[in-house]
Amino acid sequence: MKAIVTVIGKDQVGIIAAVCSLLSEKNVNVLDISQTILQEFFTMTMLVDVSAATVPFARLQENLAALGQDKGLDIRVQQEAIFDAMHRI
Image (cartoon, rainbow, N blue to C red; front, side, top):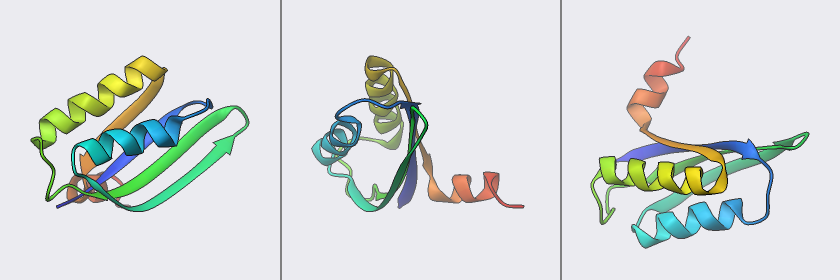
C-alpha cells in the first residue's frame, strides 16, 4: 500500500534526515520526494510504500506525529487513496 507523508514547519537542519530515519526504522520505503522552502517555511511531500512496514499504519501515524511535535513540525501520513479523494477536484 502506498501513502503520502507531508511535512510543514519552520526550516531547520535535519528535517529530511529525521523523517527518513524514522521511516527506515519502520521498513517504509520512500518512492518519491519533493521538498521546498517558502521563505522560512519548509514543505515536503513524500510518496512511500508501507506494505512491508514493521508497525501498523496507525502506529506509524503516531510515530510521525510525535516526531513532528518534537521538532515543531506538522507531520502527517495518509493512505494514498484517501489523499487522492481529498484532493480531487
